[in-house]
Image (cartoon, rainbow, N blue to C red; front, side, top):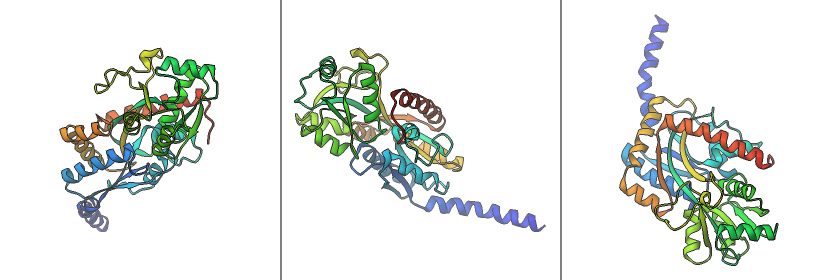
Length: 318
């Protein structure tokens, strides 16, 4: 009888516990500084989620280690649906292969919620570089090994790995200079202290439009509808090349399935909103809606793909 009464008491508390979790603000952790593309996407989603779920939603920036600090914090969080990460490719599928200090396992410590966006990557050069095409850039780099430099927003980020992929495919030697984010990297490229960069449209295009960078190619599988005259790297002699800076959301492992389904469904609806699509496009992002189960399969595939690329590229463990 005593055990029966305890069971009834516990069952009665469950709605209260769920209501308590729902009443807590939803915290979206972002592993990059304010103003970067991931942060901008998070703030658009937060605004829409707050209205849709009738629940306070706040974005918290936890920059460091290419986005991994935010995921490390989430891996230790209470799995009550009150915290999730909006993370980028690097923090999920690259950093665990690069950093010895990463304290999470992407495939076992989280519950995938949804893939939400793609941040198309572009290849740009400082206008002082004597190259207007990819072929000219490769020819110049081969004739001047080690003379050119390229930036990244940190070791293991896609701006780093994408360039390593291209350098390996083209057989060129270009010095890698990591930065603590895309902002300072773009400033140095615009100022002529860096020669080449592969980065997102969100940070690269303002420099291109200001005449401080030259657009060479896009890194997507197909040409972008809003840049129809800009070729892809794949069509310029490197078939199969693509670097997609996708963004996805995860909860801590053990989060109730009802909370995962609710959040995934909410995000799928939000990504259909014409206002969201318009605002995404204005910052160089493209909606890429994949619900929880499909995102989980995609995540596992990407984890294997980029792990192999890092292995063959010889990037040392940090």
